[in-house]
Length: 139
Image 1 (cartoon, rainbow, N blue to C red):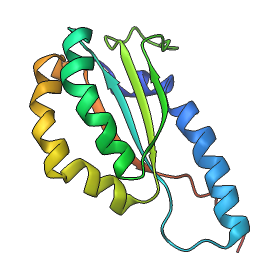
Image 2: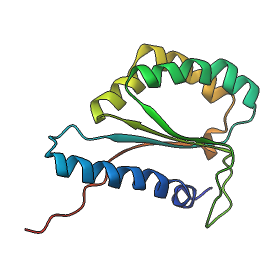
Image 3: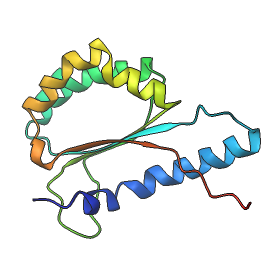
Image 4: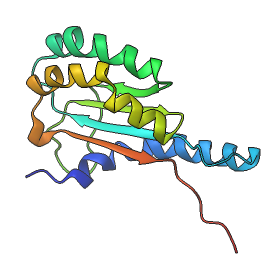
């Protein structure tokens, strides 16, 4: 079984850099509780032609409609600590946890999930929602 922590060792620093910048901006602006939320995906795709034509062509517009911003979408991610069986890395920033959840549970996205699952190795694939980083405050 693959160690999911090692997969994300190469992915999370990218997401955290953006999250730290968001946290600092939100802190400086006195933003409320509606903080960015991230989708971090490490995926093992077996057929990129079908993945792109039948899944991504539908999934990407749903992400954008939900206010998502695709920060990373790459076949060239490098595993820094252990050999990962994934070959597609995606990081998406949503404006809030509610927006991320509404996107994932939307009928449009739910309808295309079986396409993604049919051309990916589910045992080597991980999709994770994570909130932005909030630095500890001195009390």
